[in-house]
Amino acid sequence: MSMNSRKLGTQGLTVSSIGLGCMGMSQAYGPADEAESVATIHRAIDLGCTFLDTAEVYGVGENEKLLGRALKGRRHEVTLATKFGFDIQNGRNVGMNSRPDHIRDVVDASLQRLQTDHIDLLYQHRVDRSVPIEDVAGTVGDLVKKGKVRFFGLSEAGATTIRRAHAVHPVTALQSEYSLWERALEQDIVPVLRELGIGLVPFAPLGRGFLAGDVRRAEDYPADDFRRNDPRYQGENFDANVKAARVVSDVAAERNAKPGQVAIAWLLHKGDDIVPIPGTKRRTYLEENVAAASISLDGAQMKLLDEALAPSKISGPRYGEHQMSMVDR
Image (cartoon, rainbow, N blue to C red; front, side, top):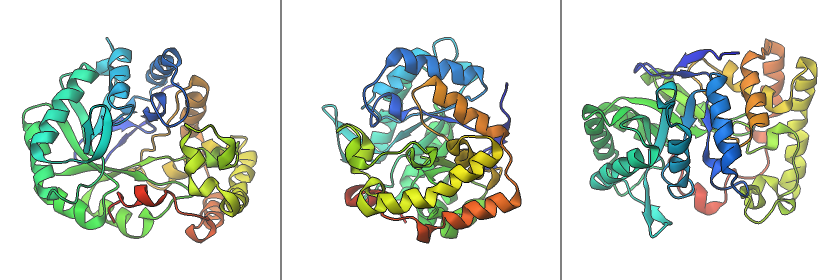
């Protein structure tokens, strides 16, 4: 099977309608398995899922190196996205840094790790409030002129930041958390994206696995698993969220699909300018995710899902306090 493509915004970037988030191959969800990760990347390309997402900070450079190795001889088959914006010193992330000279250094280092001469889509990973966004957009614009970068993106940026950046250099895509159980973007951000012709790349489209059905309480995950500290996986929040997510399983049963596939299909039905990037490090889950592109939901099912997982029905913040403080709204 080959996957359809979508235009990500109006700047001329076309990508596969579902992408692959590669973060979990190097951090956050338990131990890494390079052979399976590489096999998953190759299988994704074979299935037409060619929009690959990484970042300097994932595994502190290790994820980009992994992609560099996996894409030997196949770089031309994929659209490669990476991100800058953190200050990494001695192998540790010590805060934000989007100063122009730092951006230039990071991009050169990313190109080296990725073993490529250009990045297709370069995002600012988090808004650095100490650097005017105009300086960030201008610096990426210069990198575009030099041919090191093709398109500019933002991640977790608020409406005002998006407008200010776009006025200096066109923003092609916003990458932010958006899913059936995290819909804060719908009110203020999505209308701005559509007005300016900017695509939306939702990460964590399965609610960090919650919408895939097979969930456990926070304390049942290993210490190095992100979900162990996820407020929505804890205590009473967990109970309320399991209840809200039940309707996803009900719709999945009607469509003869898996709950995670319905969650991805819901996003695809929200607009053809939306390209989710479910993350996985295993071929089985990749194949399931990619198959979501062929699931159609009718108006009644969309309405049912919209209502059952309305923001008021979801319990707990999506991040702990420290991580929420880095989200620009």
